Image 1 (cartoon, helix red, strand yellow):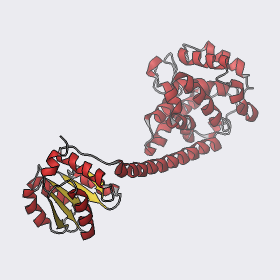
Image 2: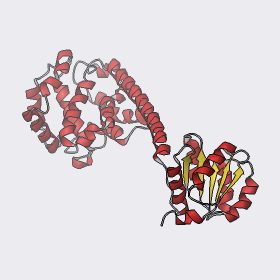
Image 3: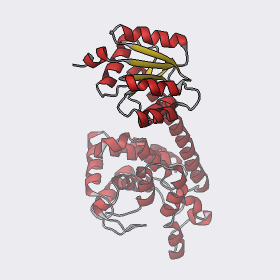
Length: 350
């Protein structure tokens, strides 16, 4: 039964503060266990006393050799004696050092006596327990760091998208329109993908490689010749190189690299076909084509969303994934996708 060994076991408290040693001793003595207490700097004495105890409560703020080294000495000399590291405050680095060093648990000295005793009893039974009071602030701290990094990523991505818009005056107003449409379509095809911010990042960055395309090609008021198309077709690979140092998720780079692939294998840069094309790219390519057809270009007038949708359906199974095209048609028919409304900004600014 948990706690039975604890009531018969000697516990050694090693703490740098006399008041803390007393408080811990009072909390644990209620269970009737014999208790010994040492100042934290007496590492040699602790190693000797550890021969006769079943558990050690060790202060995280150790002077002298420090927490990690002291835990190493204890593990080497007394591998079977569990160690519970105590601290006066939530310190993620100290908790990591304690657990990496082989401690059973990391507890705050401010824990209620009953919760402290439970942690000690679990350690004596060979179980490591981390109290929620310890874990929650640490997780919140890491979550804040991740959120800060995510905001940084979003700012960088928006800046890169703006740089492409500033250079490519022909399509500069349409990146957010196609992103909105792609997210709506993804909701019908793969809701998990639609909820991923990485999918939106890929939409925003899909043409970032056009930074490497000369402006006279981007703004040419007519069809590109073979040499110009050779340069234009390099932009997906250029885009992946541009975003590579950001360390973004594969969803982003997959969309950037493969959004010009075709279902029949005739696209670029990889000549991928069918299900070999990442789903994110298959969804986006449909929306990219829709937006392009409904936007004004120097060499042609825009078509209506209805005409563009008919063109997409005609290319189902050739250029586009039939399942994605069917989802688009169903979404428009049921009103879940407002095609005209979503592309209104593109029509107005094209």
